[in-house]
Length: 83
Ligand SMILES: [Zn+2]
Image 1 (cartoon, rainbow, N blue to C red):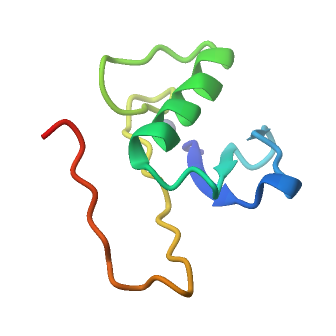
Image 2: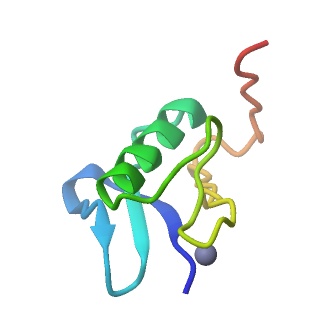
């Protein structure tokens, strides 16, 4: 089973759920770069080797962050990082 990542409110946060292979990051981390960093931090704790960019499952598949769309902001805002 591949590792997945999702957002959740900070209060209920359990960063790593081994049963579900699920990384949870605070929904407060809206900036993708920070969210990615949080995911990578968890992966580092799990001793899963990471490349320079992105986040990878133990099998080498890229881990996608399940996008969270806040109800009051649905305009599909795009954040360009590193431009
Ligand atoms: Zn995998």
